[in-house]
Length: 173
Image 1 (cartoon, rainbow, N blue to C red):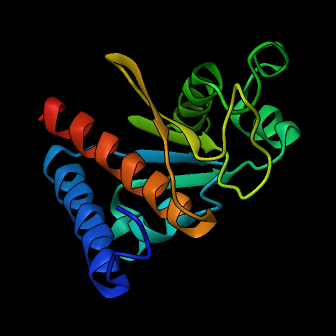
Image 2: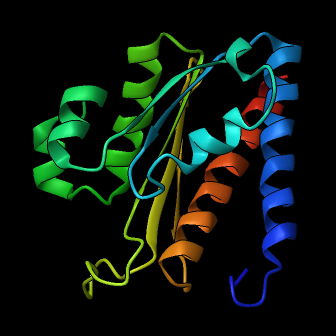
């Protein structure tokens, strides 16, 4: 979905509907969640907390933009960061596991990426994003490359994070 073609009101309603679905799934299964965000800057947490009663299942979240914050607050190993870079499947997985552990939640979800317009390279282009989830049954990660501007890439990353969480919660119920 390109932001220039998307109705902002419809997009916001769509993202909120996803957050409401997460709330329904968490409440029905008695599951708690925790968030680790980088490129979305807290957008996922904002969307989840737009749903009344989110405190029943959201244990907390961390916006870890700098590598040092990823290490300190989400327990991402410095070796993982130096070997793979902050925007990698390995770091996304470590962020999800770290959020889950730090907040004592049943499920941790994380997102890291390059929103743009700068910061990309041939190996890691602007729009590259990894979304990961971790729970008692294991972990999963997804890779995306968005083509929008910074704001559109952040919204697409938040949507992908919510979608992976919905998928994981649905499979568990």
